[in-house]
Structure formats: C-alpha cells, structure tokens
Length: 477
Image (cartoon, rainbow, N blue to C red):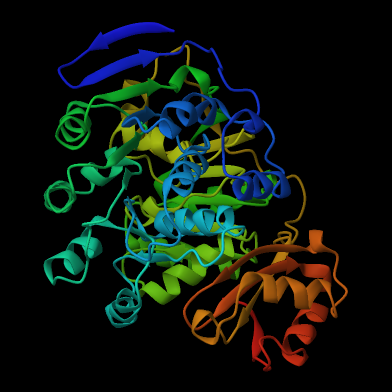
C-alpha cells in the first residue's frame, strides 16, 4: 500500500493491484448476510469490495474512485445493512443517486441483500414518480431512503424527512450528480444530517468539484483509488465515412451485418430519435426511442424492455441515456458524431462492460471527419466505407425475450418471488427461461424466453398470486 497524498481531512491511498480480502467469509458479517451472500452465489469479492469493505465495516468515512460495474453497490449495501438496527423503525441510511433508474437498481440490491433480515423497509424517493404515494409511504416510516437529490430535497423542505437518527450517508456516482447540477441540493441535504454519521462517496472521477464536495461532507476519509484494479474495456471501434443523404441507409446496412442482440444508437436530437426509430421499425428491427418528450411511464417501460433483452435497438439522445445502466450492450452506434471527445468516450463506454467485449461504430460525414481527426492520431484512425450488402436483406432476428406486463404491483402486495414462483411452479418453466422481474407500484414486468412466452402469459393470466388473478399481456411497443 503506497501513500499518495494527504489533505487536512482526507488521506488518499492507492492499493496498486493488491487485494487484501479474498473471500466474504473472512468478514465479520451478520450470519443472515453471510447466508444471503452464499445463496446468491457471491464467493469472491471484486477489487472494490475487497479494498472498501474492511475499512467500511470499521466505521471509516470512505471515498472510492471506481467505475460503474465494479461492485460498489454491493459493498456499501453490505456495510449499511451490517451496521443498522432493524428494531429501530426510523431512517438510518440515506443513499443519493443521480438518476431514478440507478436509485431503483440500488434499492433492488439493498432489498435483495436484506431478504434474510425480517421486516427491512427500503423506500425510493425519485423525481418523475408521483409524489402522493411517496408522502403516504413516508408516513409509514422506513429504515433506508434511496433517492435523487431533487426529490429528497423537496421532501426535506416540506418537513417530511427526519434524519436525526441517520447513521449512514452514501453519495453514489457523485461526479454525475454534480455534472447534472445538484450541488445546491446536495449541500442542503448535507446540512440537515447529524454530524455524527458514517459517510461514503463513490465516483468514477475525482475532479476538484468532487474533492470539494468530499471535503465538506466527509470526516477523516480514506480515499481508495481502484481505477488500476479495473481492466480497460475491450471495445473494437470503427469509423465509417458516409454521405449526408445516405446516413440512414448506411446505418441499416451496418445493423444487418452486425446482427447485434443488443445495441444503443446515439442521435443528436429527440426529433431525429423519433424519425430514426420509425424508419428502423419499418425495416423490421425491434426498436424503441428514448428522448425528453416521453412521459415517465413510457420511459420506464422502454428501459425495462431493453434491460430485459426484450428489445434489440435503443435509440437515444445523450441526455435521455443518462439513466441507462445495462451490462449486455454488444454494440454502440454514433449515428452522428458527438460534440466533444468526452461525450464520445462516454457513449462508447456503454458497451464492453462487466468483462465483456463490445463494438462501437461511428458514422461521419465530411464535416464530422475533421472533428474525429482532431481527437485521434492518424495512426489510430482509419475511415472505412460501408460495405455493400452481399445478399438480399433478410429480416432482422427478433430479441431473445418477450416482456410480459402484469396489471398488479406493490400496492397489491405482489413481489418478484410471487411471479417467479407462479412461472416455475405451476407453470413448469425452467428458471433459466425467466429474466429480469421488476415490480412497480401498480404494474409488474417479467422477461421470458420467446419460445415459452405464450405459455408464461397463460400461466400469469390463469394462476392466482396473492390470492387473486391478474390481467397480463405481452408488451409489443
């Protein structure tokens, strides 16, 4: 372990590839958490978990610089679940995230790890969701709040949140929250927290603004730079020269040749997203757009379908894709070149995640070529022409799974286990044929292999869950 630098309240360490913890069994975790880890198949910690968990469990304030997909959510979830008191029904932990989608993922992970502990209450407070049900849920209390700074700040200003018993404060993807303009909200929330608490900050970058936030929020913090622990993504990147009036046909040709099971296509405007989505749908692709004109319900459903591999192509603007966190993206296409290299790098980073390889294609007209040549050395950049289709175009392969929607959710006490039990029990489906299950307030979604989707739909329409039958259907668009 090498000491890199020190500040007045922060000690920074770089572990240079050393992994101190090799198994979760070595941690003094509660038996219920150890059993849950074992049942979920977690045996060996990731580098982030190996370096963060020992000081985290010792009660240290912690700053971890690590990329998305490094296992940080499990690390801080274990830490706060180990240290809270389930018998005290008050807010003991607050986790802030930049987007609703990330907050939902964190809440799911917390609940999953807490399933061996009786009656743990995790509440999400995010913008874009109706505020009325959140007010009702707050009146019933919670152990943990997971939310976005804007909505948590709204509830705080209205006096609906009592943080006097708070023990844990987590800032997840702090750099993204600052980039999105949440600095004032973060400061207001920090000022409402008790001074005696454990604070944890996770960020992919450690800029001056993140450092300033850390200095004002954490006390005697240990900073772990795990960047060297995470291997560079394996992404094959290619650039194609296209004429402005042939861009759309060039994209269709490349998509047919690539045959990706999952791809994200980046456009510059929401209007272009809509038009391109319509054109690709007419060409036979399984496609949906993600843009700022969408109502939250449609946005959520699109993201659920894409995350569940029930949708092959997702067309998005940079702003709309902020909440997208999916590990199975095989291909990224820049339909138009990004305005700067940082945005370009962030786009192509949507593929090649979680140890998988990925591909990134960029279409450039004559004006855009100048921008790309400015970013890359001549030796790094080769501009290709789009190869002609060698055979008559065949219809693109459908996505591997169908998305089934159930007209019942948390308000009807429906849980993922109820849906999985119905499909694999009476329904007789192999558990491997069932993908992601997401339960919302009034509806639920489950991804199932296309070959058994009709059988699964029949099961959900005819079998009783929570003592009643629910309507269900296959989501097409």
